[in-house]
Length: 177
Image 1 (cartoon, one colour):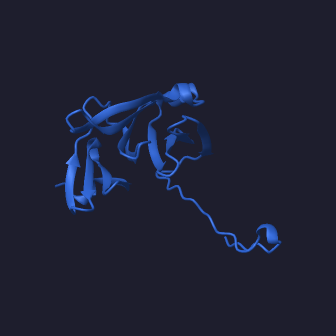
Image 2: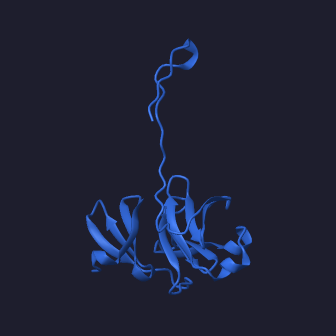
Image 3: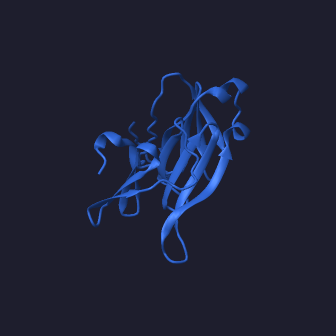
């Protein structure tokens, strides 16, 4: 069993399991119902280099997924059952970042890292050179978030509050921040 020193990134809740990325692309899975651990091997055929960045995520259909960024390409993998009911990895999408994002030629030499993932909106946050981009994985729409040279991890959050009063009766709306 791997030591906790090999765990990277926050865990992702997928159905009744919590999954973490391990060194070299494998996944540690903790089954909440059975209280058991298992290791899921990385996909065969995944393009991984010593400079690749890997992130465990949930797919569009709420199953276990894996994003692998190598150079300027993202591979999106998902776990699917075959006709015999055996789970395996399926390559769902490959995205060439240099065709999607407005990158300068100089940046082709920079390491690209996954620095965050928002499970609710299915958005991945990438650090490329000194720019931070957010990509919505279903629509492939992107937004440049910032220019920064020292970010290592990004934790997205949502803030909301319930309005008290208000509405059509003319009452006062109270909110807190």
